[in-house]
Length: 188
Image (cartoon, rainbow, N blue to C red; front, side, top):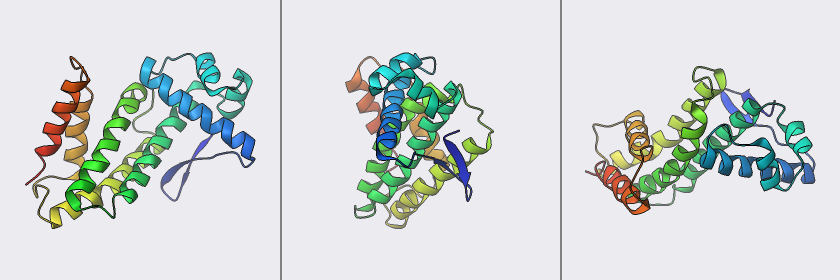
């Protein structure tokens, strides 16, 4: 399997060779796109084609659909951790808005994958902890600066933004407007 738990965190194990790592990363990117577009039942052959590799390469890296889905999910959570680190130089309110913008992208992928994954598996529980550990300090910094409501938590914010980002909209403009309204409701 391409994901494992290390020190309580889920990590995606990438191949060592540069060419194999490029194929692996191309497969993850193609899978993320296909799963977001078509759901967890997206064609594995289409994913391999999008990645520019053969289906044998896909199966060599991800022996099952579930292994691929789990790797995409873990990779998304790791990207959210990086996004939280990237906000450290921003003002507290802009840091939260920036991290939540990346979180909204994650919600699209998560929605397509979560139905297939075991929500109580060790990897999923580790991912939830990683997500809260990444976003929690961003929220707390905003609260300490007095720009984020003090009566909320990372858990509240994740659930609220997930709920709003995950529903159907008339168009992209409405989606953006309602997500912005939701995030602005967190401001003091």
